[in-house]
Length: 271
Length: 90
Image 1 (cartoon, rainbow over the protein chains, first blue to last red):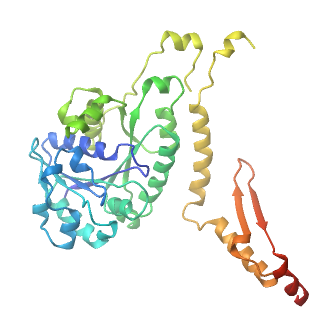
Image 2 (tube, each protein chain N blue to C red; image 1 turned 90 degrees about the vertical axis):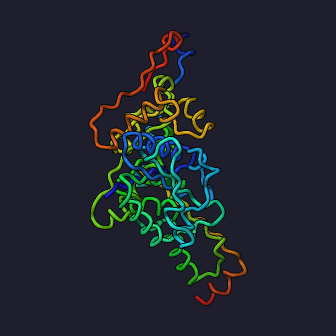
Image 3 (cartoon, each protein chain N blue to C red; image 1 turned 120 degrees about the vertical axis):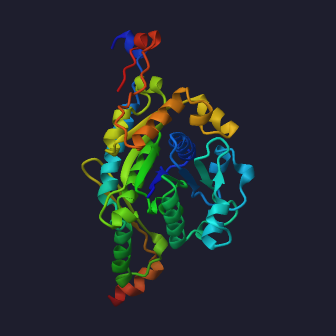
């Protein structure tokens, strides 16, 4: 039985899709069979980030409505043979997803794959709730910024109330993944620190992804950053986060920026 | 105040942390409970409607949350034409 991991955040634009691609590819690299499922019906983007946009024929909604087989809709990655993508539909509306349909697709994926990553749409509505519904674990993608942290807190509340596990009296295992972290700004006290975020959300940390141009470049090229530039900072952070997700006890090192001469002179202090 | 203080910039992260902590403490408490303001609005409306005919739009209920105390603001506009006959009847 594979593990179902939802990648969620509440707020849009914090890096859910990028993180789904990067973490999924990182886990698939270790030889595990991984399926990435795009739940953002109407606004699919995981196919683009994965560089598979021209290979989409059938999608999640086709499978749920019975017009395509699951095996027809799954796209195998050209770089990693253990990595698959189930794209979202681009045209149909969100109501095309039914809970029973999602349940069946997830159950079938779970029986074939070691990991099923569900890329959630933004928001807290039906689409986001269906993406998290059958999850065993959750990666909550958070930027060190007030609105993102607040939305993450809302999502944590939903994970504890609206998931199948929660309704059965169990808990979805939750992890916070801080993305777009700027060590220099945090050191100057201009950005919430990792300690602030963790204290507020009181949820364990999966990793810290530094703000990096490599991530944008990887998206431009249609390749998860963990595949295209595995030695770069952001990719390394994702690779380590993936190892933690698989249960490895790997300490998180907070990126550290030495104070510059000007900072000392101007007496800027960290929080 | 020394001249150096002029160059010191107050950092904003601690402010962000405090605001979030305050807000989330409230939001977590009220999570899962029905919206207090809309309940109050409905019940106040029902009470007033017993005596005065007013439109939904003339009743404003808002809550301003503070750290130790919150303020409930109720603004009711009663049009004179609706009020007179009912007041006499009551």
